[in-house]
Image 1: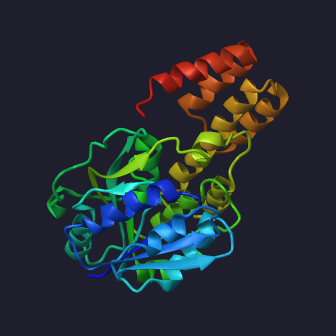
Image 2 (image 1 turned 90 degrees about the vertical axis):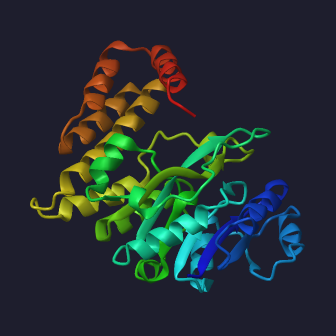
Length: 314
């Protein structure tokens, strides 16, 4: 089974060689890599061209963002199974072998993921050292319920999708958006297909690379991915079991925004967003945040957020 690995590249020259090396080291050898250079200004493209393996292709485009780069790669992909890898992250040697095993063991499914780990620059990632047997994987029948209780349990780098399923959703990633564009695709896939999850960490995500959106982007507005999910879910019939958990997911996204607004001293805006979050039901997070709106100063909210983040595994 041919796997197409899509690597968007933008000014990640110091890391892309190690990323490519992690693909070259795969125990499953039937793959192609499509590195989509998104108008980089560093030497990353030259480093890719220096790779002697003919299975690695460089595609160039004018700067248009990571979504356009991934969509471009998908359009050029030839593999039955499309995988994603950022230009500063790594696969464990048995990652593709595991994904192919899942695709072969679950021929009626289209959407597959493994677990992942994160690592700091200069450290060695603690990834699984053997392939995961399909018998160890689970079908996620209630994706949005699982997402609400267990996120994050996979990441973009740990996803594989049958190319035919992606073709039906192109443009797969919403272009022009800077955050949450990957979640948009996973949500739309989950509305149509079951996720098959092998939880072992076979991918390593590099934390806090300079310029990383996850490190620099504040979230004091509701991201479009959640607004779109909310609109779609409201249109689903009440008999759809995914409707309520999808709406609660969007509500919790609004609650997270409320806390950001409180930290910034914008209590009025926070209360208005909290009211919008209550339209589709309230959760423990909603009630905790409502109490914060009444009792906390901006400084208290910031200290509480820092304390909570300190208790969350990296």
